[in-house]
Image (cartoon, rainbow, N blue to C red; front, top):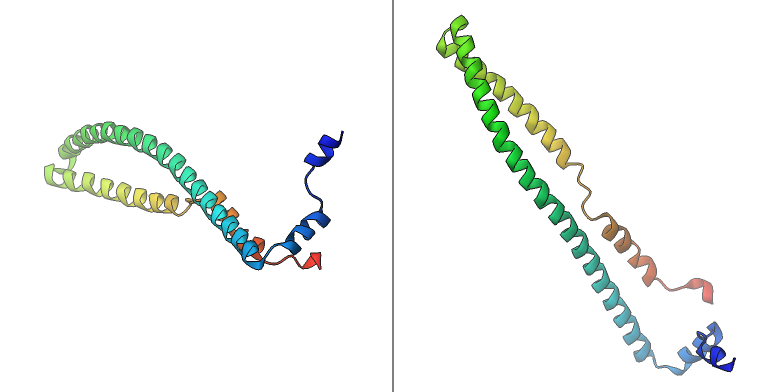
Length: 145
């Protein structure tokens, strides 16, 4: 039974006694070590978040590229068919201008939509949340007095 009592974590009173026995330099060194550990952990969290997002973005980019090439081919042939169909009604030159204008409008709308989607990116939410807590952790505890 005494074995469990000896292994118990120190009480607040015993920790304060330990602090009274330690030099200011030792305590400052411990604070610097703890702060260094905290910064390393935050950097590791940021790297993990970035790596996870980069892998997902890489896979999505490859799929989008494949879809883009296939879509380009479909649109190319549909545009040629539309141009050919309109050339019977309006003449060859005007039909090409009409098809080009349609694609210009589609491109402009896609650009605006893509820009809106980029503005919704979150970045590093968990890292930002934990980094915001660091200044509060460095403030002295006023309640212990």
